[in-house]
Length: 171
Image 1 (cartoon, helix red, strand yellow):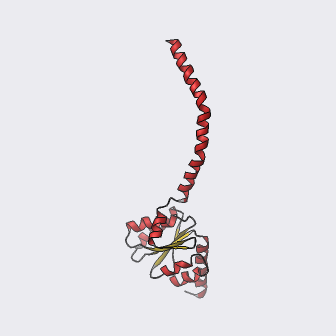
Image 2 (tube, one colour):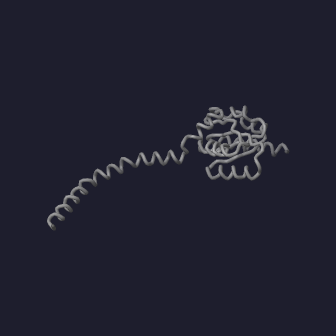
Image 3 (spheres, rainbow, N blue to C red):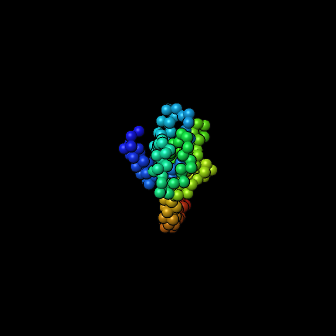
């Protein structure tokens, strides 16, 4: 690889680290091309990405970033899973690693905090950003729904009473 290409890879990796909420590092030795493609597709569907890079270049890109703690995991054949959503890469990687023994989670970093395997797995157990937003929207909408029910209840009660009176008079 020429020097210009290496500089470009380091720059790209630096941009990935700057834009990501979480980065998870895994060993992928033994994964077939089809399995790696399947992993890439699953990551893309979740809004995350996968990147294979030389460890030495990744370590250079990590220097001075909040993800610098990742350098301890960069040995052997490693793949980086990353996303702006802090939960997505951990969720997809954890799910895929359960089905495929060849993908081994080494650790990760989120917000400058280094996570071991247990940390990545606990992050994967958290609800995703979309699930949290849906929960918040439901919580915000509940009081309005309750208020609308309370306002409509007297009219509904009156309508019920009138209907009962009408049925009684008709009988």
